[in-house]
Length: 166
Image (tube, rainbow, N blue to C red; front, top):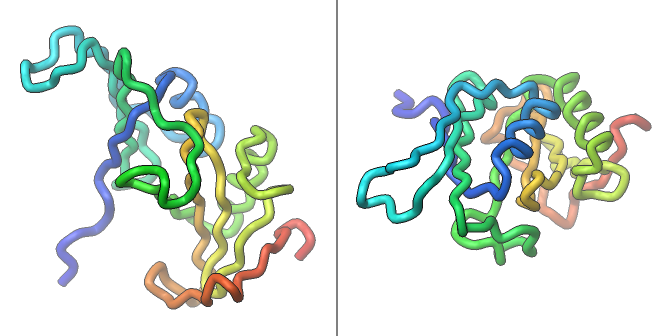
């Protein structure tokens, strides 16, 4: 029996809530289900005022960004130099969805690999991208017959592919 069925939410700092929300709407068609400024947050929350939102990125998964006056996100940093949370990866619902997300990220100039090349990891594809605050993220597509827990090839065996040329 599985005790969990997904990640509920991920909380992080943004430097500009409106810009971040617009990005996730443009790229992922993600609706915002909550957006509020807390003028007088509880005493245990030392930062004020602050704004936070819920951006739905899947049927059970929400991004919960906070825009806090005087607190800036770290921006672009090398892998494993980004702090406690290095990055997160989003699951595309299909190959068609992955290709559309890739197209939108390239049009936005948010792709982290030259030309929007995709890492073919054997059982899945990965496309790295940057959000408006410079966070390095991924979108994944799990190939038919595989699952998120399927083994992936060793990094030295990954191929960089252009799905438009396949």
